[in-house]
Length: 261
Image (cartoon, rainbow, N blue to C red; front, side, top):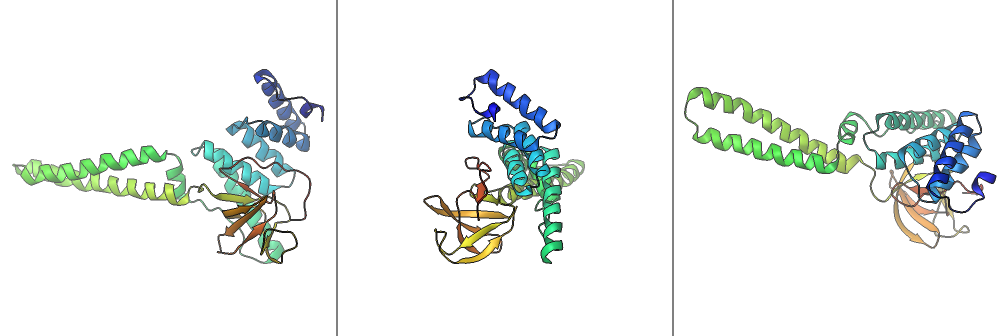
């Protein structure tokens, strides 16, 4: 593709490449658009708009695993992007329904509910600050009430203290949700439309125990060369071939040629 044959572009060329990729996407040349977006990502130009458009292209190409991967990376950059989160949940629902239809399994449905959506709109440091302020307010009100004189003042403090305590509890729950439900540093997405074979060792000749479905979330445990040891949400461990999974917080993994994962 002529668009991708030039050396690393200057800032102006990056904008031109991005606009050309967007034009290809709008004109239905989805493979060309996805390749151009991935080229920019490989050069280190990662942005929410680029990742969102890449997810659209991948979805239209019938590669929901790669679309999920792009959206998870987008939400790492912009955790409060409601549109991207709805898009991600739609994709996970689609993948889950397809799996349930084809394999008779329970399917993969959105992992993120109301609690996660609420926590996602705030940065962790902001929630921690809210927790600290609510703590000071709660215990400060209780301390003042202990020494307050006058029935009206004590009554007011008695009402305000439980409200502050409720705010503290809410902040603590949000802090827990942020830490528990946000993608961890070692989380990755299964990228291949045919799934990723889980091997007993880091070689293609080692026995295959199970095949992880496209779009599944796994945890990266270790590496041996280009092979990656992972654990799925059911606790199954094994090794996957190079390019079979993409880490949400790691270097971007391009599509590349088809592989017998």
